[in-house]
Amino acid sequence: MPSASTKAAATDAVADTRLSPGRPGYRRMSFALFAAGVATFALLYSTQALLPAVSADFGVSASAASWSVSAATGALALCVLPLSALSERFGRRALMTASLAIAVALGLLVPFAPDLEWLVALRAAQGAALAGLPASAMAYLAEEVRPKALVAAIGLFVAGNSIGGMSGRIVTGWVAQLWGWRAALAAVGLMALVCAVVFRLMIPGARHFTTGSLNPRALATTVRTHLSDPLLLRLYAIGALFMTVFGAVYTVIGYRLVEAPFSLPQGVIGSVFLVYLVGTVSSAAAGKLVGRLGRRGALYLAVTTTAAGLLLSLADTLAAVLLGLVLITAGFFAGHAVASSSVSRTARTGRAQASALYQSAYYLGSSAGGTLGAIAFHSGGWAGTVLLGLVAVLGVVSITLYGTHSARVQEGRSRESYRHTASRGALRA
Image 1 (cartoon, helix red, strand yellow):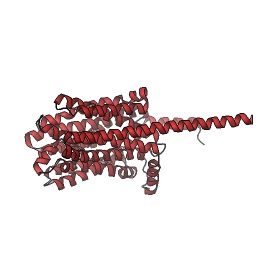
Image 2: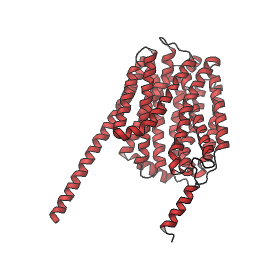
Image 3: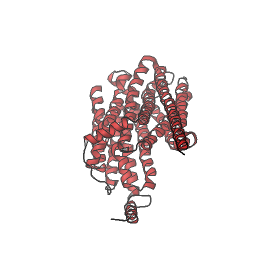
């Protein structure tokens, strides 16, 4: 039987073969997953900055056009869990490659959609294909990168997501202003094609992946376990509600800025998404906020910041609206970072499935926010969208307050149980 020192040496040997900064393959892997992240979010939200142009071309309302975004995020939400199971059987790299290839192929077809129904259908298929990326990328990194370098590697993938989401919207905005929204979608498709080719050429082969079996019963048991955990349920709800606010605001903001008193051109509206850079900073600062304020304190600060941004955006001056977007974006990314990081800490087993469930809730929130935000805008203007956002923020506050109350009750029961046990021990003595 191998000794403890032999096992430790074997573990170290395995760890030494994994990727880390300065080692062959690490830079290629980082660049490949950065490119995949750029392609994923550029494609996923490619129509969001173009919704006013889509509405005008097809002669449909904001709520109808918003389905070109909501269908993609909703399909991703529904498919991320089953595709995470497929990656266990067929491999992370294979699933990521297939997902990107299918999504890019659909992205090159999207500009030719003859009507809104075809556009929504193609976008839903695209979202389903893209679900293979978040389902596999984190698992690939956990298996192939040394633990000490894992946070930095994940950070590069997330940075690719945010850069892709931002650059896709900016590119579509300026191209649409010059040549129309169909040309803009074609430009994003070509950009994603380049990223997909870079990903496939650069991504190192998996060296530590172990093929698993597809066991629907075991997967269902793990999912039921997570969904019966009250804390995980609260975190899923918080992620969904935060994304409802974010999805509503950024789906509708183009309609508001294209109208009076702003009357901004499409290219300038696309450039508004540079505000995403604020989210990169606030999500990176979330760890320090939790260290100072605790998890619930950081969530309270995030919802306060988001609510302040919503209220400020009601003003009819461009400076106030932009500052409001800055606050909304900062609050959202901070809250999302706190909630998503808490999921992996809370789940005792099946962390991949726990994270997949969070992503499902997150993207369902995006889908709901885009659709409901557009309906609210159609009914009550920007004030209606802001009201929807404030209701979602109130939901986050209520859930966090309930969590605080539950924690105090549990702490009181634990103290009472300790006192009871101590008194019984004293009587026996």
